[in-house]
Length: 177
Length: 430
Image 1 (cartoon, helix red, strand yellow):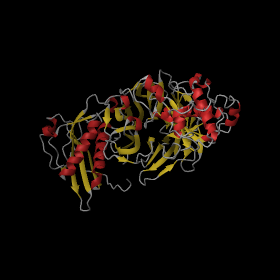
Image 2 (spheres, helix red, strand yellow):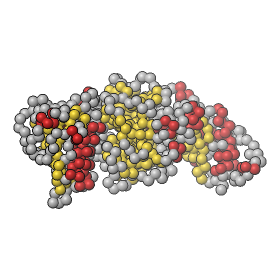
Image 3 (cartoon, one colour):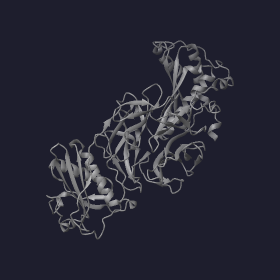
Image 4 (spheres, helix red, strand yellow):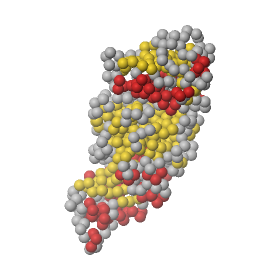
């Protein structure tokens, strides 16, 4: 059970609802670090190559904030090294409160199809919970798992596997364009 | 499929001499020595007769248990299937079995197919049957002839008049288009059931082969859907708040076991298709998925990583009595109960190696039966003698469907239109 001692909370489990949504999530939020403390200063003056990016757009999140975090093999806890990036995502989401996002959870090829769908869901949910812990309203964050079905590379080595074990924050609505 | 008209009747045996040495193949030995069998083109309608005999030869050869002989070497030309063949001439080319047949057009447009199976050494007729069908159904008649020959000689039900539902994979490796597709067991008549604008995964047949449960990304969240093959209708299964996946029908077809993800955690549920009542079967913080009912419907095999790694578990159909049955090295998942009830097929993962295995239903007697290195997701032929599975190719090369005898012999590729994965074998259709 080593895996379950990691940072992801299973706030829903104690609820054991048959099919309902997780009603204990708000409670979990209260124990999380205070929001916005990690919010960085606004993005620096845009360089010429990014000058066409509209602030608050999907491209703004992808290019100027960063959309992808990585996971260790068969793990789903947010890595320490990715917390700054997710903090920037949370701050950006608070700056653009109409934006809604979908977190895509992905796995590398080393798992069966169905297991990896479940693992991708764990990863997407871990990212969501981190954003929520940083003050993003839970209703603005959806999750979707693609398992191992949407790789970004296909070679069978750790360099590629590590790229595929990822959570990607995609703007799903409310962005400037 | 229900419109398929067919009459099945035994013919009068011509040779009354009792068989001295009964022609028989022991399927439990795999295909150590495939049985030499002669199957000349059926007489009568030459075109249909050649087509049907060709499919029968291909079916029996593919099983690994038979070796259809080259027609060029046949010493006797069959012209009248009602005459007793010259057994000596068939013995001279080493044939042990002989299948003769005749195809005739009926006044109402239907085809009539008669065939006989002869024991060449016993000098007796083992089987004589007659089928009627519409001309476009000739392949099914051929598969039914194959099934009858297979059953008469092996003592086991055949599996040739069956279909495979699978995921067709086309396009570049990083933008794969995954469509629901169906084909005959031999790869003929492939039909795409979805258009590729959304991804579908993990299709499974119901026990009448009329309905497919599968996972689709057609809406904002991936869900389990039902597809009615006859009407083409698709419907989302249930009203679940999150991702549902990994569906599988109960043996009576009245329930679907599936996995529901909630807050990142996946558990197994079962839905009654008539009342739509849902019952939760697992409530563990581990990943619980890939349920598969036992043939008697009383137990469910599934996989869970609750013990720290992905392993196979059993539970009673009401969720009670959950217990782990695999303890060896590596991960073990995707358990699938044999239709005979005696074995579980599964996927073993060791590092990046994936292999299909079978084991007894208490987890003992594990045997690995595939050698592709990236083999996963087994499905059983309805007679429990043969399995199909997905074989991944390295470097984004797509995937293929392969079959293997439960003994581990006779691994071979199943022809599909392009890349394909996730096969699910239908029950016998006739």
